[in-house]
Image (tube, one colour):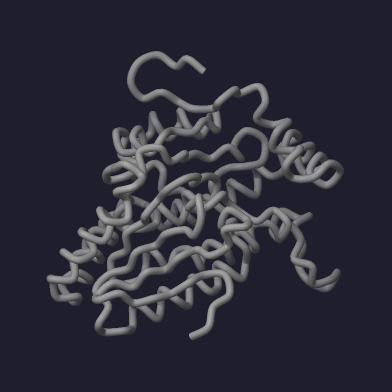
Length: 284
């Protein structure tokens, strides 16, 4: 199977799926998401694979959505993003592809380093376990003036107060702090991250994959009973609503006029370093 924007390999009993757009900080394009979906289905069907590791090539895990794809580019006969239902429709298409992480039978570990922001966090939170580098940067800055997370697993990982703290401000946390509040299972020094993840994957390789599947589905069905899948669907609707806020319209105009980098710099300037402190007072 040939891929352009991901890399796929099987190492022992572990499938390793690598987001492979390092020049774009692994920003999520439509093509990347479709390739990710196909790779995950391949790993799920291939009997020798017991579990999957999801990681990013280069210095970053994932810097969010590729905003250069804001328009579909298919012409006036196809859905754009100007009408709210078109926006919801497009958000749901991406969400269905990402939900493969949650729905696939075999367990998946997110190996997070560098930057994991915006919709990149959606990939991580839909995995079964998240192991991060201590110095990783994790957050959702788009809530400052663009919308809401279209995937809504934050609540299930770190509870309502920390979810609100981070989504009301767009501030980030370090990998070490992400582990403290439950966004990640654990954090380790960056140079030990891959070895830590592979040790866990190798341990799961000792367990019958059918039993791994049974236990994953038990826990995920519990999350569904707590409303997790319904909240994902609602998340797309609420994000589309957020896209119609005055500041969101202004951000898109700034992006069109001055470019993505300038729009981000203008948005984030007042927030300083933009990190939330988990223990002790915030001093930005």
